[in-house]
Length: 120
Image 1 (cartoon, one colour):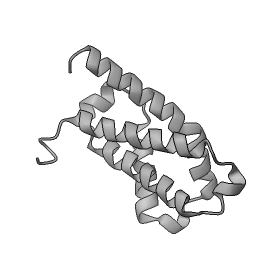
Image 2 (cartoon, helix red, strand yellow):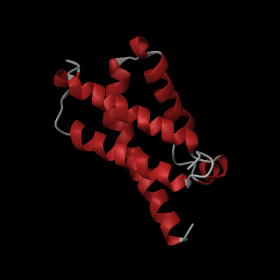
Image 3 (cartoon, helix red, strand yellow):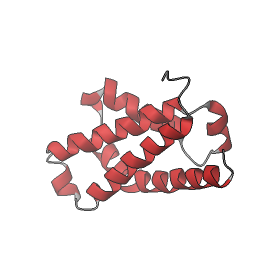
């Protein structure tokens, strides 16, 4: 199936899956363990990239309907991790994982619920 032919809810579901993985894993971490940058760090970054890549594919009209998600910042984070990896601040990543991803996950779940309720 082409990208254009994919239902955007598939992208939303992939964002939810990655955000859930992040929140489950990061709950077992503290900052001291996180900054050691073990293989889990790489996995967490990959899931941030997956979230951003799928956010990029959500249609603009959907983004306009659901402004509770910081769509641009989500895509920008993915861009920074993918293309400017060595300049990504570990503190910014930590704050994103601890503070922003749980809020993002809640927002994505609200969107999924509303879309399901409306049969869209």
